[in-house]
Image (cartoon, rainbow, N blue to C red; front, top):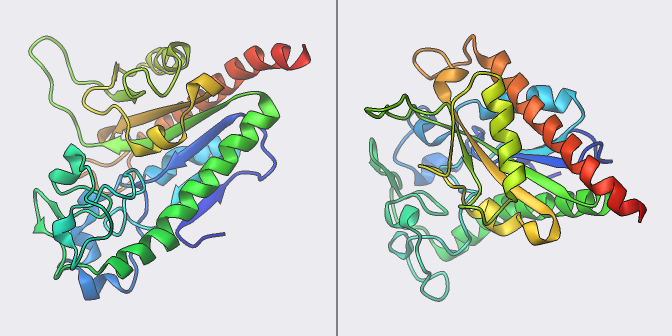
Length: 284
């Protein structure tokens, strides 16, 4: 087991839904002080604060998944390996990468800056140091996630990746209040429509407002692991932090149990629907 993440639930899968919580990490390494200009308490804005708690009911229900322990400040599991601003490095890591808009804004594989803090790192990073972070914290997560999805596909005939995140409160528009939950499917590329529709129906039945792909459509984890043409679907859930944290968005709040139940209910509805679809096919 890699120290960079925890695997929740049984190794022998009970369900075809695999959960992922890639931005929950808050085990800041001792080496952070050497490289970073800020102490961990100032870096919490990069965390999906206590998002690991959101899957607790799903774990009790027997679902399997991965929960990051390494913080996003150290390395972002939802970015491609090459999506790193070369200006952060003492020399090139490899061929010049195509940088995503997030990386150009400072939030690449290793975040460079935040709007509130400015530049994060004391100095440029060596390629060897970056490769070590990738080898120790990044690849083990993705390799294990891939293995779990493949195992689910083999066992159940299909798999669904539920990538769980939390978001800062979104502003309201003139015509309607902001959504509580944003369902991201890479604009239809990472999951079949009936999968995302099932999630929306489940959330709306519980009283939550939902929207699709705006402003969060999902990231590298969906691009890397979702293969809807092979019946491996991937969906990102962005949940408003006001729904489960306190008024300061700092500690767990009174709404936590409701969101834990919602995530577990979504996982169960998806698992039941996929099994109802897959088992007759497997019997042919």
